Length: 118
Image 1 (cartoon, rainbow, N blue to C red):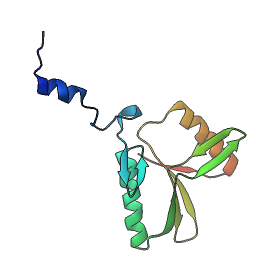
Image 2: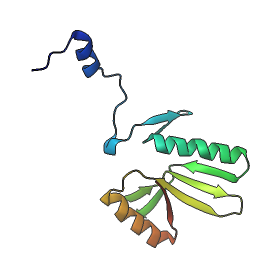
Image 3: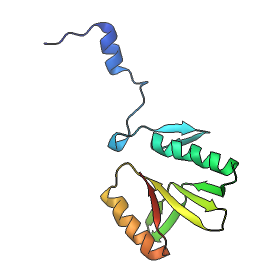
Image 4: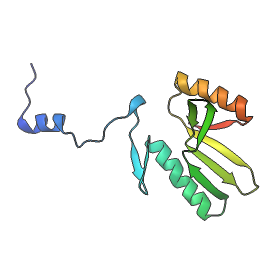
């Protein structure tokens, strides 16, 4: 039988620790935006640097696309490239069945490819 002292118990029950999201990712906040993962927050920081260096024209956070009545897909970013093209970006650690299905519907409907950052 394991015995804990008061400090061990407090550390075990401490609610101020970062809460784990699904699929072992941690939420992260940058510039007042809360991201589903540290990886997504890091990508946001990279986009800010690319924008400052004039490598891209701009980007948009969490654009929503209507796939069908009552069915939406929310990407992580749209990146507007300097050549006038744009990329729909999804930062992924784990691909759920729901994501895979929505990705197929999105790509068929909009004739665009989702760029996955893993």
